Image 1 (spheres, rainbow, N blue to C red):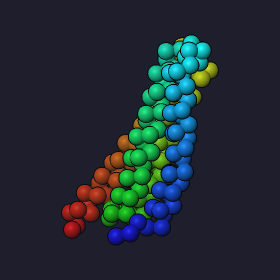
Image 2: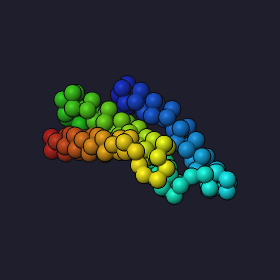
Image 3: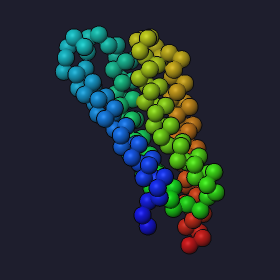
Image 4: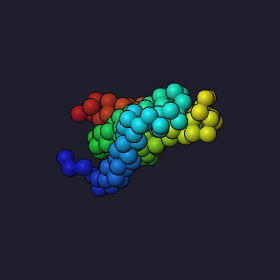
Length: 141
């Protein structure tokens, strides 16, 4: 079965976001190889930047897979949209929380740390909705 039009649209948008992940990798490479840049960042910043980059890559790939799986559920379209939107939003919120929470306060995470928790909630919601939808579809045959 070919992906639906909306799946192709969401996957296309997600793929267009990948250059930002690549830029994050380039930035981390600069941090690792340039002593001046490395010295200007705290250990907390370096670890949060690494975590943000890792989560961005993994969640982008998970979001692509989730979009394809949304076409194979037997959920009401309202719930399919919840799953479709939850995965990319989680993929934005979690990395943004890691990066932005330590920009202004290099020794302790700032209030934007809440984005990580919000993203984790969205990820859990998307996984639960999509998982239930796929199980129901499998039971229906």
